[in-house]
Image (cartoon, rainbow, N blue to C red):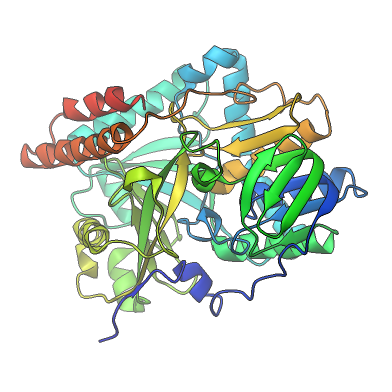
Length: 462
């Protein structure tokens, strides 16, 4: 039996034939109109929309590894347009109407990403589908009803999400102990490494310079310093998301949260007939320590979750290698939800980091005094949100007043995370409480939600 591959950045890159040959590094000092730090979705979308608006701009993208090395090439492939943050928290920087507009515009990113891919010839295995979030206990069903009711109380969600009961939910995917499912329409599955690497090629064709294998050592007004030279620019965009802590002065800005995925061998058609899942829907569950999954182009199951959520001192993985305990936990989730898969081989496991602000809410902005902009803190839904961030940052760089620049996430700056060991203790306590809450609910037959999860959220400000 083949041993499971662990790391090697991600399965998505292996699916493309292996890791790409790095582009040339920065070759000494240079001056451009805009310097973007980070060649992931946020940085590349920003470059794309800037070039669409002002083709004459000179733009340099600086990347420590290669385009798509970080979360953009490692995520679960959910192009969802979701809004998962606390709506009430955004009211401190805007109005109710602004929050609703933000959510509405985020939903439109699914169509926008697909439009760009069709226009630019990016083949990324995109498949329009639904997202199915399964409730496997009465308590989980109760939470989903409450979440849907909250959306509708805000005047949103009525046309996008519906709740289906057990028999109908089982007809979609045969998840064990199904009580029902929340069906979210208007989403898509994507192969994320294909998307990010295709986008990098597109912006290069538009005249953007991408310098890889170049480590940024500092960002200041008008200057980005690297180990290969200095870049001077009137506008600088920090698009480093989960790796932001590695830039001096930003160590406690966003916490790098671990998320990991395991991928099975391709399933035989007979097993798909047993499981269902014929629409390639995105799949999640309503547990406190939730999971996310997709059916891939070639008929594998990619199952993801938090596993070991955070490494002390904001340390990150080594080229995607994850812990055996994380692989064990994800395998347990896969087998619990889909016991039909118990005989399957796992082919690949990996992890990455996502950026988490102290208030767990995404932000984008630009400081006019320094000329430094940023976007991130997507808390795990960056495939779609990064596209919207790129459009917003392009407006801010070009000093255009638009519907996007007035939204409540713009120029919102939450407080920093606590120093160690407080943040390690807080995050690990939160996830231990989530897992304990899920175990208690299962042990009691899942009749009511555990209060431990609510306590965990209060503990960390989630």
